[in-house]
Length: 252
Image (cartoon, rainbow, N blue to C red; front, side, top):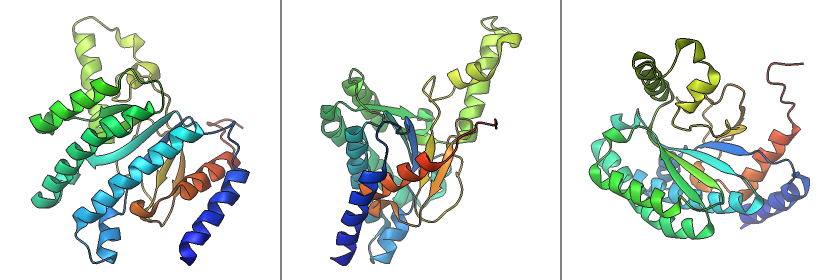
């Protein structure tokens, strides 16, 4: 009860302080701490992942409401395949379920849902749902939700290099024309603006192979809160801290 009142009070304070005319355009989120959240409550890890999926819906809806344009979330990394098979299977089932629900729940709120990552390693069932969800929301004009699935920053860079090399080999691209814009164009994120801030709850202080190319000048915000407990108040706190920073991009 006290914790709930405190959070509501914090949210009201942050709402007053946040400058809604200077919001970050693109927010990256490493949704971490689901398993530890569940363990703390004596629940199976799958319960933590389900709670995290519900938090994602709430945060996306909130960010869309206040005017954030793009959110990219780390849902399943190329390294997550190392987890126990039963947990991976549960995660895949949850992702499919999430996409089906989001197609209607978030799609009806004008949210565009896109999947970034290496889809070759995913089942045909998941890939079919990905295609369907993206198609159903592609004409929406609201917030863009990028879900990084079977994604790794290094894998993404390798994928981009191979695409560029192939174009050079077939004379579709000159070596002299390879620059930052060309490389960014061949990333999974394409030509969208790099993230202004990456948020990582759970107490870990690293990027864990997330948006390595895109985060060269991204602000980082860390919190000890586990992702299932992450609230709109925490999002406002991150945005408020972001707005206080002086982003120089290598200049003075």
